Image 1 (cartoon, each protein chain N blue to C red):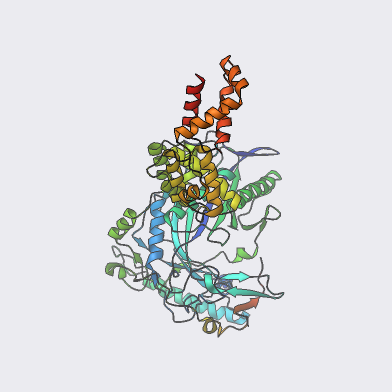
Image 2 (cartoon, rainbow over the protein chains, first blue to last red; image 1 turned 90 degrees about the vertical axis):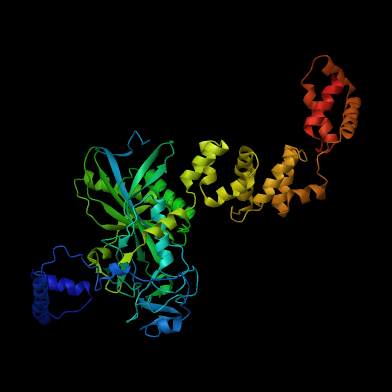
Length: 99
Length: 487
């Protein structure tokens, strides 16, 4: 599988990354390089091997840990808002987005 | 069991059938959020119930709330669905100001609940099975307020990360009524289970409605999705409006395009939501922060054993054990709170009499006082005590109504009201006989007429005696005394 420049532009747009025209070719080459590595991995025989859901083989160990249904966090509006580029009162303020 | 005639909308060129499927988002009842320890309560100050996880801060790791998982399993069991002991969370990627992570943690390829079924009841008395495709757990987004400022939208992340169940139906519904009945039934089941409060005004339950139309006998045509409809009535209206729009497109030789639309409740019409089209590529992939969700079969069985009686079973029990009509059983089991109230009143008493009082006098009192069954003007125990006072002869039916009204006014027990007002029914035969004597003596002419054969005057004598006794005479004893005296 290899990506054409239109697909590279689409991926960038979906990820909200601005690509200058001259960057498209370089990005295409890098992404296709990564896909080449993946193709190499796919050559490994995996017949009869249980697929993994993520980076760890935890199903055998009982899956993810769970927390109790207790309120242990919150009440830190100031900290949550501290990095906001803009705020009004205790709300984040963003350019108007209306359907 | 199923409807015999298919609902159609008549176009210019003939009849059209509707095909409807619903994706319902139900907010899980839990104290804390799906992957963080922040609170879920509605109505708190902006951004006060937000952890660093909910705000999408870097380096934070989500840990799932066990109760949210239990709630999803309970709901799955209530929908008679398959529970998947192995499920997985994926990232659904899109950008929006109220989604700080830049992705929603959801379950795409491996949901926690698989196929199930819901039985709906329709106005004509028929029932229909609607298939459930799946139920999965996911995070809610924050809330955007667009009307607070001319150039800015305000973002409150209190809802960000709250657990949602997305319940997807098969495209099994064929009319606005069926779509409405299905949503109402889901809401009822979840309220019985205590897994979602079903409060549509606060957004706890909202539906995406998929609609397509077709000629009778055809396969499926292109569907459109009407997003975020927030009442049962609006779901029914949106289905009809969207179906009529599509019929017009097809009949004018056009082609319905698959798209996301919004229902404008003021205009009663749907409109295109163009901004969503580009974003439809969600690039799902397994969330690397989360191992698979593996459930212990014994825990699922424990949850199954702890399920409350569901509405269908309860309705059947009322008909079978209490001898109620299907209609009365339906009304009394519609809400769990109503059923609990009724059962308290009916316990150890005549179930039909209890049903009449709850559905008649109590419901009227709720309407009049604008109160709810959760906060009734008359407690269930007090209404039960009133029925006891009728059974032991302390109160006649007429006096009981009077006492009930006093109970609505004061919230007091019927015993207290009877004592206070001296309403106790007179069963002293001496007093009754004295009243009978007085009435007959004062109406000698009517007595003569009665004896000459005008028997309907008996009712007049009863009325006069009751009046003389301020309504407190025991009706049976009054009748008896009159009959004896006039014989």
